Image (cartoon, rainbow, N blue to C red; front, side, top):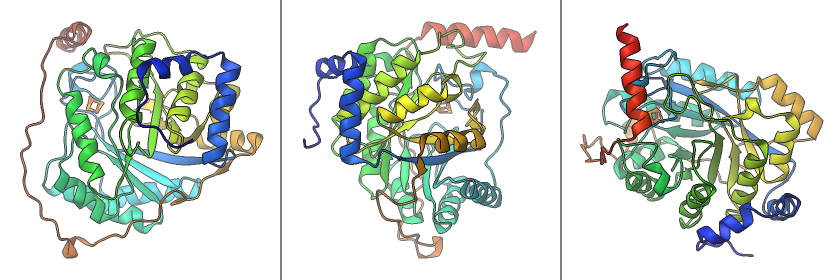
Length: 365
Ligand code: SF4
């Protein structure tokens, strides 16, 4: 069956709510047609600039306003990033995802450093992904020229529920950023989080938004919320493994070619639970003891799991060939010093405001 770009919320909900055995069988069948079921990509997520973020994403410990316990740091040096990438490579990772807690990319020396990091990692024969916030077309072109393989910009949830999570940036800006990436040869990574208090309709709504993109994202991370103390979602109940398996399987069915990434929340899952996710079509994990700021299983534990399940780590550039790196001196794109007007909806999200006030009072005390 050809990839469809016209999925409706009703159709997706019907798939999500199928009897589990049927859902698993269907998803595994789609998975086998499009991917090697015994291969799973191992990626390493590196927080190159942590904390101090001006946004109000209700799930995120890096938002400055929630004063969580995470240790912030300024932008890492290129050498530090290179050393971490080499370590990740020797531990079996084929991809490095660099995350910076920024609202959007700003032209200037910090972005120039990120471009150098991209060049450096691409030369190590690893796939490079960045998640740096909103992005203009020129910035996307400069990343592409440096050798970026993928850009991550999550939709997080459905357009409707997004308004209950973030008030400082709009859903449309997210789509525009994805569109800007699509104007280059960089692949798109975009997914979301379940367990933020959304309804099943919102999970389906997010999958509608992703699957109706044409082309669909090459990579879709599915995260289970890790509630962090101090954030507005600190008391959110954990998602069950059944919800995770259903979400992975449904994603696999509606986006057959996509690399489905089992992302945050793996520490709460048993090996058996993760095996069910792989069977349902997940074919990537993040390795390393931290996922940006939240805990993640140890690399050696993951490798033991791979051994027990007979899984092999995916080689880099299996799905798409390695991009060329153009050196900064040869670049045909200049820094434009753009000041794009990304939106700020600014509506009130009760739980975000209450948390911010509470944290402010706590910091003062
Ligand atoms: S998710 Fe990203 S943009 Fe939102 S607060 Fe966290 S670091 Fe900032």
